[in-house]
Image (cartoon, rainbow, N blue to C red):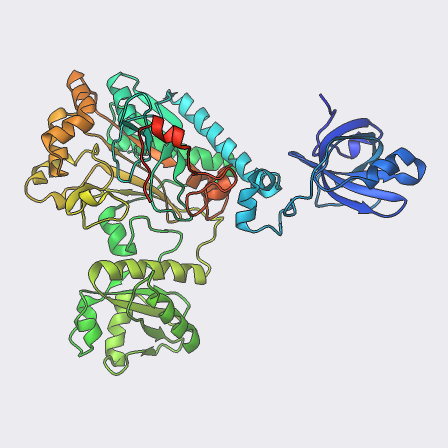
Length: 589
Ligand code: ASP
C-alpha cells in the first residue's frame, strides 16, 4: 500500500505516530513560513502542516502544488492548536516531513466542495470530479448499503439472484423499447429490457420459486426529474403465492431497509384501494404524510346560479388547516398557480373560515353564510381554515386539485422529507383506454392498454367482464407508495395460456401477433406453470427517497441529463458509415 492510513481515521489517540497518507489537495493556505493543506480521500479530510522555514525541499514542492494534485505525504500526527469540531479528524494534523507528488492536476472547472460553484451541466460533463464531492459520494454509499441490505434480506428469505439477458426481444410493457441492431442477422433487432418481466416468469416455470435481481432496465420515455432512460430495479418474483404473501414479504423488506439503513421503525403499512386513492387524493400515489383529503361538493354547491359550479362535472375542495390568514395577495398568486398550463384549472374559489367563526368566500354573491356553512360541514373546516375549491371536467379537475393539495402541503410545511409515510395502493384497474398516450407507439391509440402490464391477472371475480366491460375489471396489482412517490409495483400474474391469450385479444393483438411476440411465454405456460406473482422496486427512487432528495440523478453514478444525454462521454452520438453499413441501417435527415 502507498499509505498507512486514510484521511478520515486519525484521531487524538494517534498523536506521535508516523503515518503516510494519500489523497487529493482540497485547499492550500499559505501563511508564509507555514503552509496548511487539506488532504482529501474517500474517507475524510486531514489537515497537513508544512513547516516551510525549516525544510527548503518542502518549500520547493509546496510552491508548485495546486488544487486536486494527488499526494503521498509522510509525517507525524500532532495535536492541533485550533481544533475543528466539525471534522472528525479536526483535533489533529500531520506535521509533514515528506511529500511525493503522485500526479498533477489542472485547475478543476468547479470547486470540489459540498457547496460548489459548478452548474448542473458542467458537473455532469465532469461527473468524475463531481463524484469527488462528499455529498455525492455519500449518496452512492447509501445506494451501496441499500443494495447490500436488500441482498442480505432476500437471501435470508431464500430468494436467489439470477441474471437475465440484456439483449432481448421487443416485449412492450408500457413504454417504447430501446432497440439494438443485429449485425449478424440482417434487418433484425434486439430490444433492451423494460424489465426482466417475462424472464422472471419463465424462471418460475423452471421452478426457481423465489427470484430477485438488482437489474438495469431501459425505457424510451420522455424524461422528467425522476426518470432516466436506464434505471435500476429490485426485481422479484415468487411462486405459489397470493397477493397477500407478496405484500407481506415486501412490506418486511421495506421495513428492514428503513430499520437498518435509517434507523426508523415503520409501522404496519396501510392499504388503500385505487378507487379510494383517486377519490380522496385525486392520485394513485397519494402523499399520506398529511390529510387534506378531497371533498366532492357537487351536491352541496349546485343550483345557486353560479354557472362555473353548475356547469362543472366535478366541484371538489380541500381544507387547508390554519390557512385562513392567507392574504388576498397570496390567494391571487395561488389562483395564478392553479391556472398554469401544468395544472390546468380555470380558476380558484376560496372560502375563509375566520377565527371568529364567520365564513367568507370569493363567491359571496351566490353563496350566503348559510350556504357556506354547508361547505364547511362537508369539508370539516374549523375556524382558522381555508377551503379551496376547483371545478370543471372530472379528470382534469381531479388532477388539478391533487396538485393543489400537494402544493398546499408543501406551503404549509406538511411534507417533511425526514418523515416517511408508506402505503399500499391495491385493486388497480386491469386496463385503461389509450386515447393516444405520447409515451406509446401511435399504433396503440384507440385500444385498451394494460395499466400494469399484459401479464397481470384480473381478479378472478372480475374475469367475466373481459368481454362485456373490460374497463371495470380490477387487477391483482399493487403499488407501494412512500411520501407520494411510487417506489414499487407488481401483480399476481396470469399463469394459464388461454387466459393470457384472451388478455392479448382484449389488448387488440391478433392471434398471430400475440403468438409471434409472446408465443414463448404462452408455450411455457403449457408445461406446468405455477401460480406466481411479484414486484419491482424502482431502486434509484428508493435510494433518493432515503437520501431525502427529489431527483434520482444524484443517486446514479453516471446519469443522463434531461435530454437523455450523457454529456461526459457525449452519448448518444453518430456512428461511422462503415458501422451503419454493416448494420444495414440508413440514416435520415
Ligand atoms: N415488471 C414490472 C415493472 O417493471 C414489475 C412487476 O410486475 O414485477 O413495473
